[in-house]
Length: 400
Ligand code: CA
Image 1 (cartoon, rainbow, N blue to C red):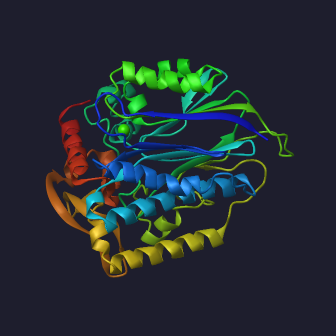
Image 2: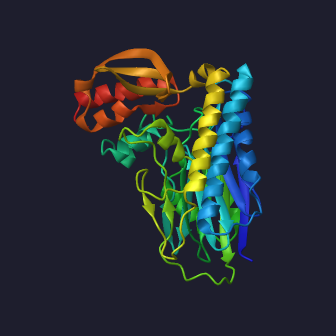
């Protein structure tokens, strides 16, 4: 058997009154969730989101693709669970959570991720971030409009663009790769990565005692003021199973991305949720070289049917209430507008409506953003939408 030492540690920090983070350290599954939504709701969101992940613990899968898909499906199920709970109880309205999970199976690690909690790896002294933050500042970095250093000090650095429990449809980033003996994986909430620099995190991970590592990381955040809840899960690979599998080739990397404005219809967008992409319409897909094929059409069809039925049920049974908790920025004619709902329709039923028009016009938008806005840029709240739009205005006035 593969030998993994793992430990989790969470601290309320020095400013917050409650700990809304949650984590799971199991036999094969490890996760961190960072809840939001205020008193009690944040805790409920993070703990609820962990349940479908915990249910995978100890399960064995036929191949890497199936395992990655199962982990991503569990994140989709986590989203449904939090969305449902928030709809059922008004005191939970508006709650959400990040979710970053790792499943170790055979000699592979599978990672699934939504939000700004991170997964890192330390291998042969090289330290790298496996996940991409779903944050406003990361979006600006990707667009070349902000450096990482600027992002670290940006006043809106904690605004996330994707979270579990906010929208009935969720895009999940997922990947898998071969582990090596000596690899150290870290899952953590932004209560660590906000106050503690990457260099220091890398130094602290370079230690064979995972208990000391976890303690050291949390202590470093506390010494830096711990403005937020701090949660870390540390895994160290001590040995690998002898398997008949071919030697590690290229890794399978699957990343589902939100639509980039190619006019894809609602059903095909749904079909991209919770499955490995065989085609290349959705994002990056690098096949491994073992000649295995993906799960194919049946899974995709099932995912579409389940999603469409679920959506119809939601729409019929008060879907407007659920949709009213989702926002996006799009275009109403030439006017940049904040919409409630999601940028789609089912037959004649429109799934969004205008929430607030802005002063910005299509022509005011930076050219590279027009396509994104046309397709609809999802945000977690009206406030985030206003911040996003303000950023476009500010960016237009300055050259930074
Ligand atoms: Ca946090």
